[in-house]
Length: 503
Image (cartoon, rainbow, N blue to C red; front, side):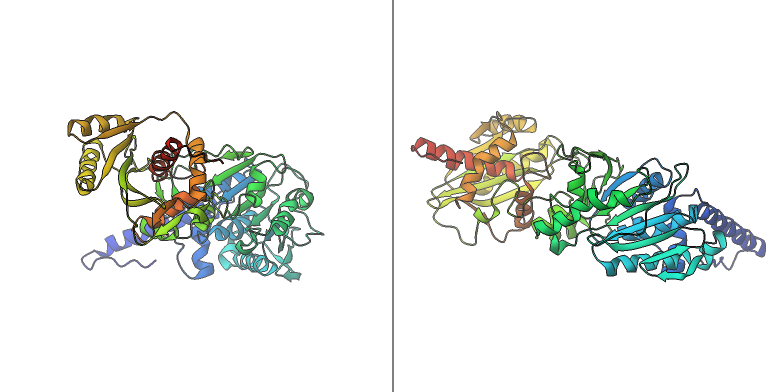
């Protein structure tokens, strides 16, 4: 850092400022280099020396650092961190964590596993480089034995060391930690044990998952040696999913960091062996400098990848509840017999709450067609205004009704629209979303639901349908009126005509 005082500053002022800056730098150095200091301070200090650039920090780095500090102090011994790709998880949880571990205890022993030997060696070499920095050695002289500087296996003169291997390969002749339960002695650090291309291979998933019980635990000096798993989710039965659903019988502290934080979402009930870590991050993009809200919308184009790798909630590639191949995507409308409007209103308008959605559907011989949609977060007066504007836009069509969920803000909207002479129909809610989804799914599977191919909302709608499971995963504000349209325009109509639709 270069200090350039104003020209008008006196020599005494300049000296005082330089002295203050030196004091700040010294304080930061003490905090960063103290054995009991924070991992994030350690990273901030050494990253520029190793990489020749400043460490670009996001809010998630603080949370990850604080969580890994709990591992170093022995508070957490089983940790899973799920986070999108490209969010510097390896830098935090592998390179700096292991180097910090040697800083605390040069006798520490680490095993690092990832999806390939080449990547494991590369990460191990980065740890070696960090430990070898002059600044590091001035504070903690950790010497690496000259006869053991292979990138995948090396030892310190104090008896510590590191083994780096592919997660699916043999891990022999080395154990993480050693027999001393009074201090930090090392860890097993698993980073992305499965590469994305292998996620859809049951054989490869099984091979990696079996390592949790038949290899990895046997490589610990004792059961209190920490295991850290940090990864992007790839499949419902990937390594993290395997552990969170009880594969080893152990409980795992779980720091879950999707690309969009939504604090209203509850921790999934199926993750029976996860102990959720409260991250305290605000609703919205996880790291806006990496992915803004607009850029996140683009990511949604690949719905499966977005749900799994970015939102950390993998669903079936075919769709969680709906068969995505069953949806038809239209560019030109057929002859429409009649139209109906369906509205789903949010109870609140805060960042964490759902949108309110207005949809116009048309009924044709070939099924039902989503013709128009309006979506936003509106307080009650604005919701009424937007609803009236939507009605005015389409009232020249043959509209059979304006259907609104008779619940929360929808009840007030029903009353206000009726006063305006709009033919509003209240939709009762006597069944849960999962049951309604099951009823709608056959109509989707048989190609009776047609959606616009190239509207602005198409990408977000596709992603929401891909993730919808009726159990609270992700958002469902666009799916709710879609299911209402199916129930009203397809299921009820065919029931009146004596049709039977079986699941």
